[in-house]
Image (spheres, rainbow, N blue to C red):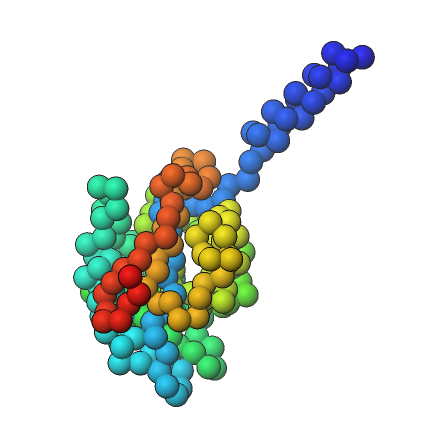
Length: 193
């Protein structure tokens, strides 16, 4: 009886380990940023936000982490809303310089669909996503990352614009914790250190 129970538990454990779901796109790096600083009025970014957007061009075209060149090959931005075009505006200078299109099909509440699209179509790529900060935790979750690992209390602070979340995925699409991290860039005056 004990042998049968042990074997059943062992088989169940083995299945649970081997049935681990794919978190993200296989052999890929996903870089997540928040849109640049808000304009005082309207749906755009401020002059400081435009400086950050412009600075992202050189920053991301030359990004190297752990001796790996991580220039984005694919760019996503949260879909424009009535109140905000900021995610798209933040990555437009980079997209123009890199001659890449910005994919804006996914809105704030469609993180799971975006993650599924990445898993299906963007294996082996460096992917940049510009998102609205309140929705980054859901995006991290959809990609198999614990928001509390990368963000204080699992939330992106409203006053922080200079963080980049780097998620590395292995050949099975599983998150590699030792290669994933939060990076603080200091591209514009006043960025917290």
